[in-house]
Amino acid sequence: MELPYSQEGIILASDYFKDRDRILTVYTRDMGKIRVISRGSRSIISKLAPHLKPLDWVNLMLFDGKALITITRASEIKSFNNLKSNLESSLIALYSAELVSSSTLEKLPDEKIFNLLLDLFEYLDSKSVNKNIAPSSEEIVLAFKLKLLDILGLRPMEISEEHGESLRIIEEKFSCLENIGWQAIGKERLGKLLDHSLEDMLNRQVVSFSRYVC
Image 1 (cartoon, rainbow, N blue to C red):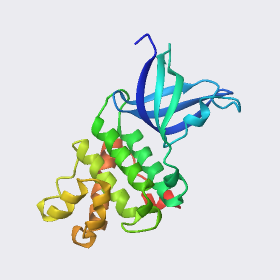
Image 2 (tube, one colour):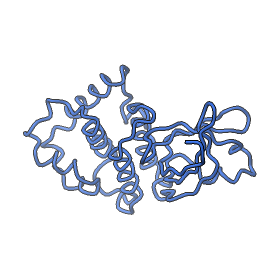
Image 3 (spheres, helix red, strand yellow):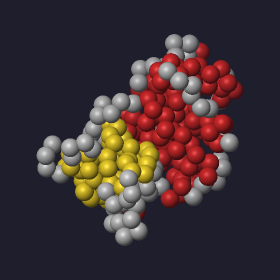
């Protein structure tokens, strides 16, 4: 694409580049994961910086440069301020964003992954989560891993019909998680199965959420 084009995306991560620039990792609805450069966005007078924060849902105007895609304009769709004001919710979102970034290839779009992230962020941004109503942070992360592996076609074979109703609820929106009988599903065993599947895919150990929080 030569002319500037629009992409809707969720910012997974932001890294410093040179003196005043940033490299952003964004999961977009139409292009999947991309890395883009935001020139001058570390400057205090940058007009782009306020719209390019990690975990933001944004609309970007992009231009294909020689080495990296360049952001020419950005507007915020939603900043998820409730999520960001709650430490636990922020950690869940950042951990989940890191999992998506690690487990996906660039420019290989999957709208289900985009919608999964968006559904998680919307749920974490809701008042119920910020009031510490069940499920726990670990249970939300467990559900996210299962949903992500399911989309990637890597759900462990050991997870079978014995988990029937719980799996059906997990496959729905995050707002349905409060109805799960987690003891029946065997949380600890399920967590190990999911982590082993992620480790096989990534060829490295997956940091558990509890260690991530610490």
